[in-house]
Length: 198
Image 1 (cartoon, rainbow, N blue to C red):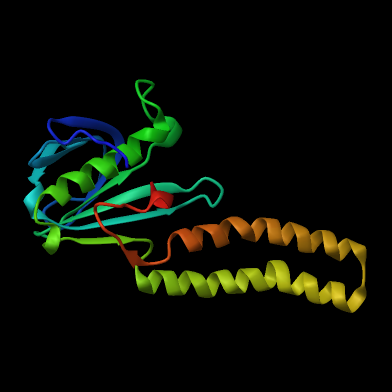
Image 2 (cartoon, one colour; image 1 turned 60 degrees about the vertical axis):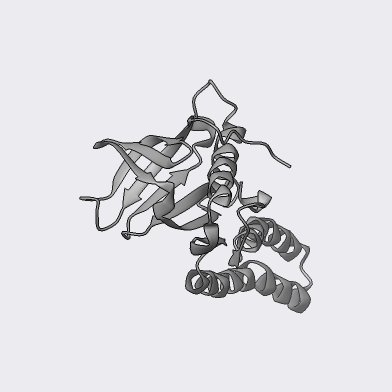
C-alpha cells in the first residue's frame, strides 16, 4: 500500500490547465497544493482554490506521445469548472524525483477524497467511451495499414523485403496498442487508483 500525507498541506510541482464556466479563458499554470479540506492551483491569473467537497469527478488518463505518454488527472467541480493536473515528467523541479510527483498527487487526492463521503464523486480511468471507440476504429485502420497490408503483400509476393516492412509496422503500432489498453474506459476506487495511469 502506498502511503501519503493526509494531515497537512502538500505542494505538487505539476502543470495545471483550467477551463469552465467560472474561468475567463483556458489558462495554464504550475503547482497544486492539497490541504485536508481544499485544493489550490496556480495559473498566470493567480491562485484559486476550491473545497474538496465541491469535487464531483476525478478522471485519470494518459496520451500524447505513444512512446512516452503524458499522464493527467481531470478534476471536475460542481459548478462545471475543471482543473487538469498534468505530469511534468522531466520538466519537474530538481527537488523531487519527477517519477513520484504525479503519482504522489493522485494518491494524496484520492486519499483525501476517500476520507470523506466520496459516494457523490465519479472516479473514472481511461478515455471517455465515445473517444475510446473512435480511437479504436482509427487504431484498427492503422493496424491494417501497418501490419495486415504488409502481411498480405508478403503472402502474395514472398519477398523478404516485405517482411522487414511488416516488422517495422508491428513495432510502430505496439505503443498505440499499449496506450489503448491502458486507457480503456472504466471506474476505479479512490482506495486503489490504477497504477498504469500513475
